[in-house]
Length: 414
Ligand code: GDD
Ligand code: MN
Image 1 (cartoon, rainbow, N blue to C red):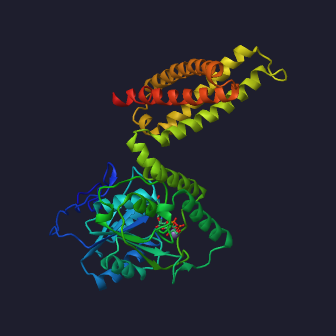
Image 2: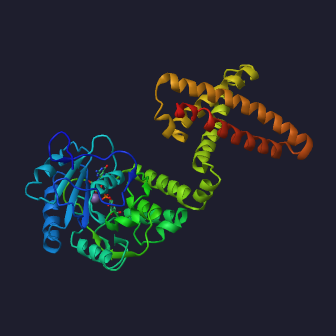
């Protein structure tokens, strides 16, 4: 493998998070594929990394000497975990180290590690010794015996958590329950879908483009991979001795986001969405943004025109309120609904252009809205609220579709 700044660090792969079917060949080795590539994601684990590497190496040297590699993927930890890991490579020849400076996040770290891995079996284990190393060989054996995926689980026989508070247990189970509701086809397949300790056959995830958010990489593997037989091995999630957990409330948000995204792209909606070529996920976001605009519009209208506030004339107030709502919607759509597109077009004049187009299209949408309301009300359904609802729905689809094709598309093509 090639190197970056210092000369024994791995080069970070770029591009889509996709595992190739055939392992990448390694410069300087016989080219023979290694059996197990075990990724250890780390962030601020300077007090653990040495022990982890020592214990895992010892264990694997006993059972599959020379037939494995450990890949530490560190996200440029300020405590320089990567540097310590790198200094261990002379003592542990099976150890390889990646220092990521551009990307962040546990899940993508694991995938980047797998991408350089040459094994036919890809695994992951935490770098803080909370995952008992002894379970490793049981996981590997399960895969050897035919499982596509072997998961270390806290919720099967022999599994558990050491001393979690009731609150933490409830949160963990609540998250799992929520997952079962949103994504039963994925979470229903394993007893511990939150596990970050597992092994998967390369062939089961090869060629799938993984697209994880946050911490739960296993969801992605099951959701997008082609996983047949699953095995589970019980383990007790130990307490941390050194360093601290990086889990914050943000991981819960990420988790829900991840579930919804997987659901939309892999479930029935995903299949339908591909078939009719309609981006439902985007449309949902667009709709939510539009909904937020209603409140902005109402709020500003109140501030400007209410007799108890500024008491401006209604029409003038409404024009300003409408425009501020449009600005609100534009900003959210640009940063969220179409984030992938706008990320590639960040210059101010490009943004401005999108905003002007968005404005024009929304104006067109308003005209359409009034037109349809009248048509439906006068000729079809003489109920103004139902008619208005239909008008809003059609105008929203129009707004979405034209914006997709013009505001966030043309700039993309250029
Ligand atoms: N490269 C990288 N980048 N590594 C990270 C990052 C990151 O952004 N965030 C965390 N890590 C590393 C940590 O250094 C540790 O080795 C591992 O990922 C797990 O992180 P912790 O912060 O220790 O997580 P935890 O112990 O609370 O959470 C774990 O919960 C599950 C059980 O529900 C998960 O990480 C799972 O692996 C575990 O099974
Ligand atoms: Mn941990």
